[in-house]
Amino acid sequence: MDVDRPGKAGRDDHGFETTLWSAVLQAGDSGNAAAQEAWERLYRAYWYPLYAYLRRKGLDSGAAQDAIQDLFCRLMENNQLAAVAPDKGRFRSYLLAAVNHLLHNAWLRNQRQKRGGGVGTLSIDEVEAEQRYHLDMADQRTPERLFERRWALALLEQVLARLKQEYERTNRGALLAELREFLSGEHPEGGYAAVAARLQMTEGAVRVAVHRLRERYRDLLRIQVAETLGNTAEVDAELGHLMAALRE
Image (cartoon, rainbow, N blue to C red):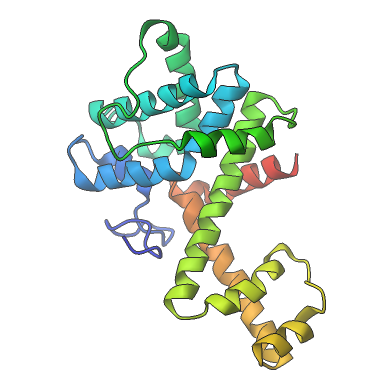
């Protein structure tokens, strides 16, 4: 799937192509290849916020991994999303409610399904998971606040990954490496002049390149957020919510 194309089923009234979350919601068939691909992409991008949430709730590493994999496999295999209205779906909110329901039903006491749930493409790197959570241990946020912060950070990681793929595909990887620091609004040491000297460009050309990079970043950020929504009219509200989570 092309990194510039979040879906393949047309555009809505706001100009967004059908989102991954919409594809999952609307598939209506657990054997649908497009839905399977959408699930796997969403899983790879957003498993860690759930992992951090479950660890903060008191689960050990193995139990957290089992719970996440069991949750995704149940949703994928049983098509439990068929009844969810696309105009009310937020993948972030739905997953948090679903994992809480799983815990409420005492899954950990009554069932420990083999990791992977029979779907070999879904897996968690235990070492990576614990390394990342070790960095979060000093964070005093509630499980819910930590989940939302980590969700927002995971989303930004996906945006940067898309930018990197786009720039490398057009042989501009070195340019992105030099300009990436400007995305935060801060100027690296030496500013535009130092970057221009290293890239053998004029300072004006660097300013234009930074402007274009920021514009593309904003576009991809909106696309990435839209991929987790059933209704792309909610992009601005979701962006505001997630940016607030990062500031808290």
